[in-house]
Image 1 (cartoon, one colour):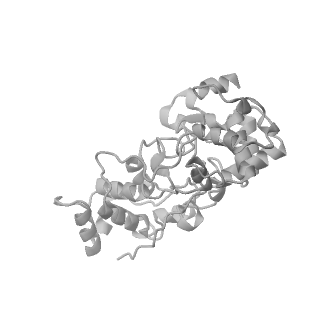
Image 2 (cartoon, one colour):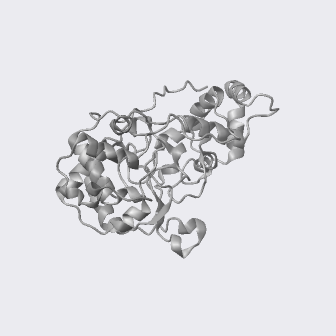
Image 3 (cartoon, one colour):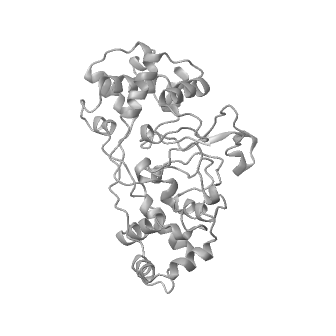
Length: 331
């Protein structure tokens, strides 16, 4: 625990230095002291200087997110795998794309993705702008080259008008870069504030149940917070994590660095209760199993059932208000 204290940049309070399993009751002041380890979710993630957030870009990005005609089959859109009804993911172990192909990895949610330090499980893109076009071109996902996608969009007067409104002054605004910028702008609005946990952090001591508060204590004292920290409960760094039967080499495929073998970016825990199954290959369905597996592999400890149940209760408190997004009328 002393090593964990150094990792967190300070001396942990006495309750944290004790086993989380021993925490059964605590005063409001005791629980409130844990607010210092966390941050509530801001209304918006950082906005890049070269892609200002405007209503016109957001509206265009929403249309493109739901547009299936920029796929090779004409039936797959971003929303196919990032389904608003399914936690903006797909709830299957590994993504299914063009011609029924099954990918190597589980579909991460796009909720709060603007708060991440990199995109994709292997972090191969630094931001949402870089991430946006990859699935369109990927043979196993939407399977359409960008020139063909732009030709499709240029065939609709509505898209001509929407691009012109989003990028005024450009002679030919229907470009790959502008598609990426619009998609990224829309995704930056897909945030989930007002979770019970956020309300607790903002001073409402009754926003979480006693089990959820105990789970918060266990989450800190067992070391989960070392990687799952910050506003998105992710350090956006890469950690070695091997699942039985998985051959996915993770970050190594991007960097070629042996130190990155089997390393994956820490996923956000926000809304984790509704974005199952878990891990890079979707191998685990339940939060209870996922919590115990992480404790064994990453923390080197076996948690008792009470502690697991409390941590899972806490994880359920991380579900925020879902974005109120109406399906766009496509041309």
